Amino acid sequence: MTPLVRHRLFWPAVVLVLLLVSNVFFAPRFFTITLQDGHLYGSLIDVLRSATPLALVALGMTMVIATGGIDLSVGSVMAISGAVACLFIGDLSDPGSVGGVLLAVGLALGLSAVAGIWNGVLVSVIGIQPIIATLILMVAGRGIAQLLTGGQIINVSSPPFRVIGAGYLLGVPVSVIIVAVVVAAAVLLIRRSALGVLVEAVGASPTASRLAGIRARGLTIMAYVFAAVCAGIAGLIFSSNVASADSNAAGNLIELDAILAVVIGGTALTGGRFSIAGSVLGAVLISALDITTYTIGVPAETTLLFKAVVVVILCLSQSAAFRAAVFRRRRTPAATPAAEVPA
Image (cartoon, rainbow, N blue to C red; front, top):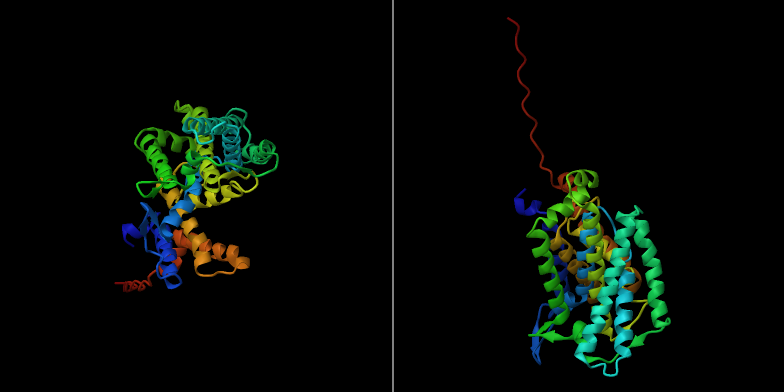
């Protein structure tokens, strides 16, 4: 088997290509990209746009899982971020003010960072299991978002805020550019420095890393803050795209898709090894899967089952043991050496 086939991103990439190509049989113009009024339009652009919130959440989840943890609260943080931003913008005398929108964005991301610090302290300082610590904020955070909005959908009319999720820059969706900038910054800070090695060391063996002088608590808190800020940005994109704050729909169950995207990308749930590119690829694959179900006309009542089947096939294709069992070559039995004749 060639090194390319053994690469952990090979099979997810193959499944993504197959999903995209399958759309051509039902929508011949699926790969067509047009330029209208300086904006790029097409199904591929739609796949990228729909994947942006999940890609951000998966990126943050990657860092948390790399430390040996998990974060179930990212969906609630998305709801809080969108609610705070929309409420602040709605109270502005001029919702079209760029300065006011930037202040609302800063406030939303600041509260998201506080939520990340809360999770990180519960896990690394107090010692609560990550799944329980983040489950607390998952439930409470959704309630906080509903309290902020009064259980209602808060609509906003702000052109500068609308740009975040539905705007274009040089023909490219602004949300895609935001994700690209965040991913590039993460690669530079994590993969181009010793920070990534330290995070993997904490996830692989917290005790050994602490004995080696690594500040495991600080790195763990940093990972949860990063995940929360990424979720906050995703919440802003979601709210901007629909021009409202919906505390019930924003980020609903996105944590499960994010975990799936991270696993598809080759990050070990046990901590240690992680792949930023793999998580982004996993998010795009899930987005492509959602769009494919509609393009090929999968009935609504069987959509989840269809997705489950595709995910199972993908996971099996990534399993080295399964590939060995299916594609193993038949070996010719070695010739039995002739018995020695006693002298």
